[in-house]
Image 1 (cartoon, rainbow, N blue to C red):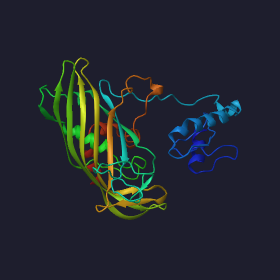
Image 2: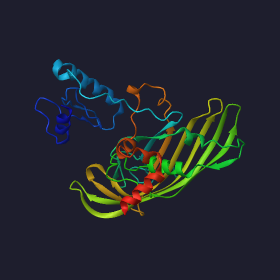
Image 3: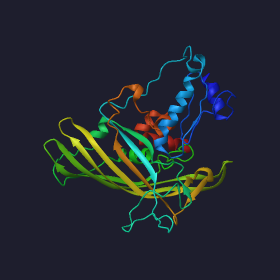
Image 4: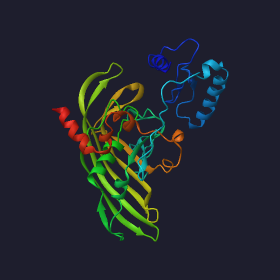
Length: 341
């Protein structure tokens, strides 16, 4: 039943008695447990309209016969959302294109030269194709968390973030094409330069505050395609050159990192999906300012499985049959080099 419903949804041929499966204006797909496609609409980018739109869908759902609302039986086994690693943490990551070129109709830069969100959904020819920052995540192990705590807790003491962890943060946490991650992807050799340094700023009886700063340079080849045919026009270099700044806090009593607020800001060049305008190329002469923001998901270890946020698309899909490579970028790199040969 589900396979039939998904097939109807993907080829856009729903039954005359059902919806098309979309909550238009969002990325939400809706169907009943029996496989009947639903439908609804919300104004694109209207976060306040999402609740009313979903309530309208539920009202229509309640009018359906019982046989179309609830399946009499369910095949297979329940698959709860996997739990993050014991003792580790989950970083929530938001990515957002930014504006900086001032125009008379829509100034993108303040008098001090600060970046800001673009006015509207279009700027410099690159449509963001999303009204707000897109959310991903990155799981860290307990060992990785411990590696961030300096052995010398003295103001001014500094240490480097382990190279393997830097690779994971950059390669898995800074994917520019969040909405179209299958089309463009970083490879295990894409980190051309990257380093993070931790400096102790404050040592309290309970809390230690650390400043994190560094840089990243990601680069990889990608196909620039003609939309919607998919014909490859040429191969271009996807490149992200950015600085990183942030603050970490370590609780000495619980021996856990309780705060990780970090942001990267830099220029992206290469393939960029511009919604209905298809694929565009951000060039070095007109790069796309791109920012990522990191924070700890404090609910990841508190809520039950049925309420837990799923893993990121990169984790659950790209590495779905290669789980060890998600945790070890060097292992991923070795396998990738064998495949290249």
